[in-house]
Image 1 (cartoon, rainbow over the protein chains, first blue to last red):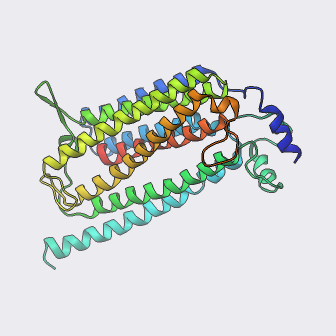
Image 2 (image 1 turned 90 degrees about the horizontal axis):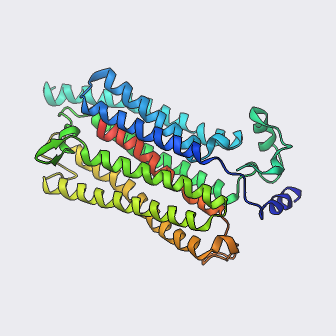
Image 3 (image 1 turned 45 degrees about the horizontal axis):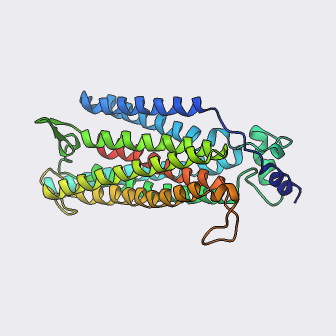
Length: 116
Length: 234
């Protein structure tokens, strides 16, 4: 109860907010990073270079959006942990499906292309 | 947002066991609606992940060549085909609307009603432009003969993944746009300053709702980052 009444008291004053500069910086960075990831296609990079650049810019952009636009950088660790640990399950799922896709691909090669 | 009542609690990694082991609330300083939105977004992350993983599996296991997205999504500009032009513009529009939303949340907490309203309206218009361009892209591809079961460019699975993933994302954007317009009206009317009670609830309106709406909108942008990388660029 104590905690709630204290929060209620604070309701009338404006909450402390972050400086506008940080949002504009992140905004600008997102533009630049998006431009770079578009350039990956523009210059037709291929192979490992293409994939690593795409992933690098993607994770950087996702991280900036989550950390600053979605305020996770300023949240308490409990919320951050509850949100980020489940991502390991997705990573496991990706790993499983990569193996499954390879199996399907080779069986298709054997039965469709080579004809059994 | 930082609350003065949180200052006495442990910080950093020590806060995790103490917050989780405490009474009543695990997410200290997080309004319940905001926690619920985060949990919803977590479940939505899993849905989008399933779509993108099934796309990965489909694409990696087909023996037919995957369509070259650079060509499929190119657009003629002054007679010259520019690869992924529309997608690049859509990306920039969505990032712009994410930026205006972030500023709307800031001005909302500062109780700057007019700026908050204008920025939410700008965000909604950005979302509307995005959905419009997506509708254009869909109709262009449908005219070119892309169907969920076949297409003239390569592997037949391409169409089903394209319509499913971008369609589900577009639905999210559309729902977001509707809510942005509703909230722009509420902000302009001063609901959050006066603590007016909502239509579906007896609880008083509060500017934290703008942050919750913002979380949803940034998530839509976040998902697009992944779709852009995996579907269009890969």
